[in-house]
Every structure is written in C-alpha cells, then in structure tokens.
Image (cartoon, rainbow, N blue to C red; front, side, top):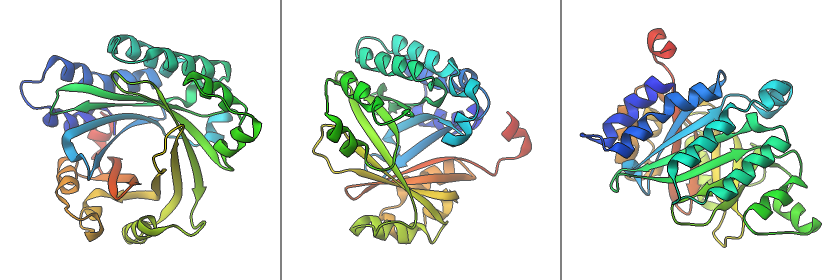
Length: 293
C-alpha cells in the first residue's frame, strides 16, 4: 500500500476523535515512505488471536536481497536508519532504545542500512503504541555474534552455526514498552521443501487452493522456549476476499472485516503460530489515480 491506501484502511479503526497518539501513528506512513524512497511499500495485518484490536504499520522493501546488493548506493542508503532512530527518540523512555541503536550501528558498519525494514503496532483498546520491530540483513554468520551481544547473549562458533541454520535470511529486533529487547532470526526455504508438520501442512494445503505458495519462513526467538512461528509466502498476492472464505481459518469475521475495509487487498503471506493465524497484506487492484497517490 502507499500512504493514501494505508490511511484509508487504518484511520477508521482508530475511531473518532482520534487521540494524539493516534494522530502520531497516522503521520508515520507518509514520513516513512518519504525517508525510504522508491522501491518500498506499506503492509498491515490481521490475526485470529487479536483481529482488528491491533493495527500494524510495516515498511517493506520491494526488492530481494540480490537486487539490493547489486546497488551499493541503495544497499547503504541512510534514510530509513535515520527515520528509525528519530522514531525511537519520539517514542520516549518506555522503549529500550539502546539495543535498537546498536543494531542500527551494526547495519551501518555492514553497509546494509538500505536493508532495514520496520514495523510498529497500535493497540486500539488502550489507545497506545505497542511493539516496534526493526529488521535487516546480515552479511554473514559471524555478524550474528554482534547481534547476540546487543541482547546480552553470546555463542561459540558451533552455537552460531546452529542458530543461523543453513538458510538464515534476516533478523528482527523487537522492542515492547517496558520490556527488554528480543532478537528474532528468520530462516527461509523455497517450497516444496521438507515435509511440513501437522497444522502447517494443513494450512499449506488450504492456502494453495487460493494461490500458489512460494516459500516457508521460520521465526526463531533467541533465548525463548516458545516454538518457532512459521510464515507461508505466496508466489503472487492472494486476494484477501478469497482467503476469507476458507473454512480452515474457523471464525472468519476478523478476516472478512479486513477484506471489506481494503478492497483489492492481497495477502503476501500467512503466519501460523500455535494454532493462531495472522494474515499480512498490502493492496492491489486500485485504480491508476489511487495507485499514484
């Protein structure tokens, strides 16, 4: 989505009158896209656990890693990193900013600032900002040691290899108000791949009825005993309206509401987490005037 499309989706969810923190949140789409420059878009999500209680704003790079790394200027463009640092300052002391600033400094040393993506959640019932997440690429397994130190952890060489696995794609750093920073690692593999277990296999079978699946991304929370979260990615956007008809999702109200609120929205991937689902979407199918807005 561009800023106009995102606001058409998000603004009604914040209610009237929009609180001051809501106005701050609604000012971010245009500011973040302006800092990021061409080749980026906005994404949001809805989930079966929280549904429309949480409004997510995500800034996404519309390029794969090889394309980014072929362009040194884009790879190390500082705009998003500065925007992320400014956002940390604006959010105030409730967020543990030191680990995030250390991660931003690492991306600068690695000349991968252009890989930075970020997301911020707005909690509707509390009328408050919630989790901020920063994401980026790693130049190699050894760089993982620097990220572990950001969250007060360390690992020897075999430990690093185990954490990274064979297909480490990118990292994420979660900052929640009043909580310590948490590191996440994302491994990505193309489908079809290894046999998928249980719920994930059933989800893949149902989702593939709507659109072909391309990849599986697994999220590992470093230092947590929680099971990994999995994301099934579509090879092309899956219409949200079509997904909302799948019986697999159970009670469909949370997904139908999003499909109606953003006509033409397409899901990029679906998160599967201990029986709960989260659908991440942007928009397609808008008219030329809206798409250019």
